[in-house]
Length: 220
Image 1 (cartoon, rainbow, N blue to C red):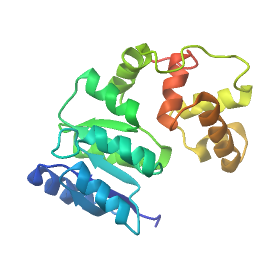
Image 2 (cartoon, helix red, strand yellow; image 1 turned 180 degrees about the vertical axis):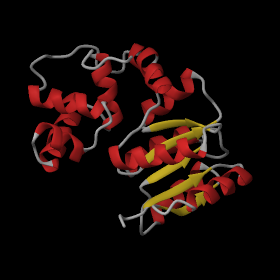
Image 3 (cartoon, rainbow, N blue to C red; image 1 turned 180 degrees about the horizontal axis):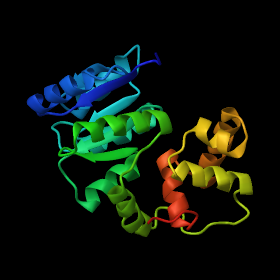
Image 4 (cartoon, helix red, strand yellow; image 1 turned 60 degrees about the horizontal axis):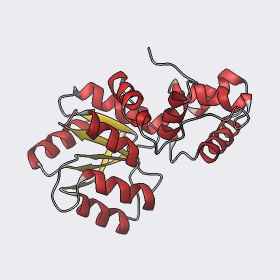
């Protein structure tokens, strides 16, 4: 069996957190590394952990250090740890803010267990996962800001890089992209690294934002 996806849960509502842990521990490919009640506890754990999690599920509004501030710190200190926001707040400003600071997925607490499990698996496999609603928020809110690149230099990306970028936006992983383009997964990873550097993106989610902003992909 494949290596288990290591998860940390962060929420100041103990009952919710324990219920979440119970649901996720039943999945054969998940393991709960740790639980925390706020961002400070999470960061303290990560800084001393011998094994880092693959995925962190975090609430937004918490005492001491909230989910947004914690995500900023983690994105800088532990760039390989993927942050999924799990919250009751569905406003566009909350979603846009979390994506902007580095969250790779955004899920509401009224989501079904199946949705949650699917999101974790997708994030682990492909680096990010956004629902149609969140993608529309990216399009409407994130792309309207001036902080992101607003124009595409057509000579910036090669034709192959654009092909890879489009497939990333279709939420394909490196193996799937490689099979489609008849190249190795390692070559795909090389293209992805180049895309991150050329577009000044912090993660795969940033590539999606870039592609949307420059009309390389369209939302239905």
